[in-house]
Image (cartoon, rainbow, N blue to C red; front, side):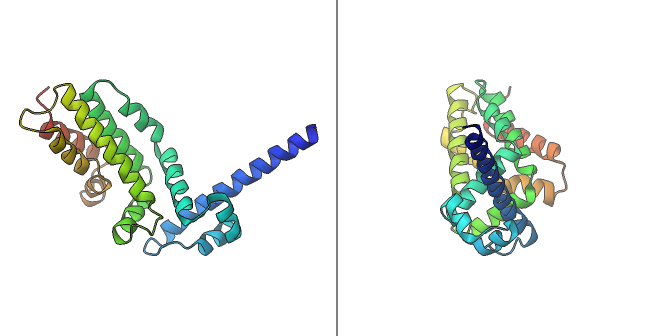
Length: 206
C-alpha cells in the first residue's frame, strides 16, 4: 500500500513538472521570437516532450494558451488584484484595482505585449486566450463603474456606461505600456498617472 501511494505521488509530481516545462516553453518561445506564432511542435521540442503529451495535458492549442494565461495571471499578481476588487469602498477600489492590475502586467511586460499583439493580428493565434482575458477585464470595469455609481462617487454629468468606457481605456495594457515604454515612466509613476486621471475624469472631488 505504501509503495503504491509513493508511486502515485512520484507520478503526480512528474506530471506537474512536465506541465510546468510546457508552459515555460510557451513563454520562452514568445520572448525569443515575438513576431512568430509558437507552434506546438516548437513548444514540444523546447519542453522535451512529444506533441501528443501536450494534447494529453491541455487538450488543444486553445487549451494550452488558456492554461498559459491563467498561469501568467497567477505568477504576476492575480491574488493582489482579487483582494483589490473586493474592497467595499468604491473610490479605494478604483485606486487599488488600477494599481494591482498595472503591477500585474508590469511583472512581465514582454509577454503581455506579445499576447496582445498576437490578438490584434489574429485573435485565434493565441487560442482566444486574450479574448477571455479581456472579457474578464470588461466585466471588472463594468462592475466597478456600477459600484462607483451606486455609492454616488461618479460625476453628475457622467453615466455609468461612460465611466466604464473611460475605465476600459485606462485599465488597458496599452495605456500602461505607453507610459512605461513610450514615456519612460516607472511602474509606480505610471500607476500614479492612471489613478489620478481616472479619479479626475470620472469621480466627484473627494
